[in-house]
Picture 1 (spheres, rainbow, N blue to C red):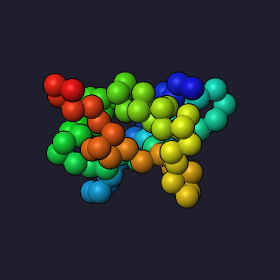
Picture 2 (cartoon, helix red, strand yellow):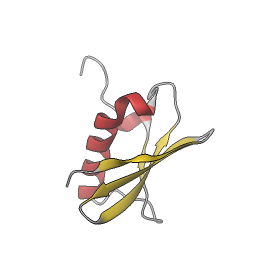
Picture 3 (spheres, rainbow, N blue to C red):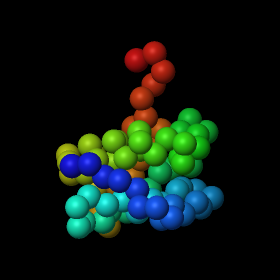
Picture 4 (cartoon, rainbow, N blue to C red):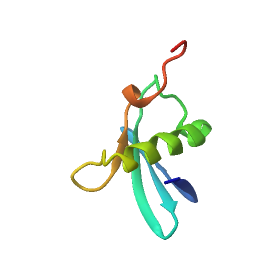
Length: 79
């Protein structure tokens, strides 16, 4: 599955950034925790889409169907 962020469907909040992503006809809400270790979400959309796709494929969704991305999901430099 390959998710893509829908244009204009990014909402920044004090605590997280909400993205609406689409794969074929299905839409999914993806929340990225605002953290200095993640940095600017908009500049990392390709990476965020890849992580969200992997998590959705593996059933890693919250009780409300959202996919949450935290600093622990991000690749670590040098690893």
